Image 1 (spheres, rainbow, N blue to C red):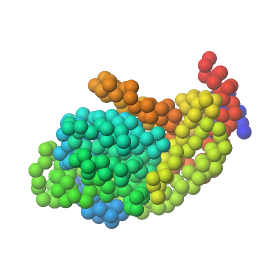
Image 2 (cartoon, rainbow, N blue to C red):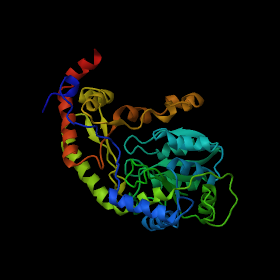
Image 3 (tube, helix red, strand yellow):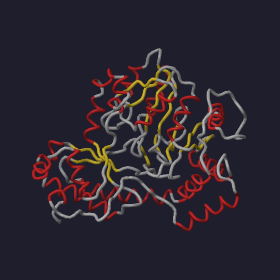
Image 4 (cartoon, rainbow, N blue to C red):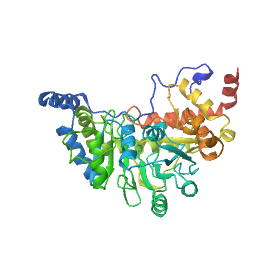
Length: 394
């Protein structure tokens, strides 16, 4: 192995390796799709490609309704309004901040809940304790190409009379509890950002089996003529463009190939990281089929010999753009750290995970050999932990 870059050597990789999926169609396919849009002169507002995408996604998810939107954050805001949520909603603080911001945009106060230290999803017992007369809903997250304790949460929601819905931004194509994600709870929201396995460059969709909820969502999205008019509290401009739909349709064609590519990369990481003391890959045991969208590791500082953040500095010197995921917990982010300061002391699992987890590159910009080389690089860094700590402390 060459000398580590942080210790004066050259970077192991000549260009930066990003963490996102970044799967895109070939130029020929992209050009043909865009030419078709310009020939039809139908660019947005529920065009033929958007309708085709919704139809294919309905079949993919096995649900009655799919409503595509411009991005998943708008989808989450619309979901809260379509469900008539009021007062407070229980949500994990260990999540991407947009999950919580969607509640703020909808005029709802978040009730931060700790997560299970192993699954990283909402801890059912903690959720049950937090439900009171002001709580109208539970917003749970399905992370890392896996699933949270869906069945337990559904039982709690039914018994306590609150609505349960899911931020499944990481969950496209994931199977758990006998079926694909998409039909659990009142609804589920998925992301089609470029960093996700199903990419529209940006975008998302909402899945539901409830006819009334679907009608409300379509009217709130402001897609004129997309279903019968119903009373809604507001409308938005959350329409997906035809260009987004075109890319999503091509990405759907490539889905199984891309998942297999991810799986092979994940296996390469697993083989090379397995013997490194203090580092472990996060498992997604609740999923019977993962999309392998994320390779997330957990680091024990005492065993590894340096902190997670010190390791990330060393890796970035090698052009490996690892990320802290998630960091910080939303309860420690402005404005929530100020408005909900009482939450800052009783989320120990969230705080612990925020200092231990990191995400490795996987997807179109990586291959099996690169994944194996990154795994070996982490081992090399661990062998020089003392020297690196000394360099960083200067």
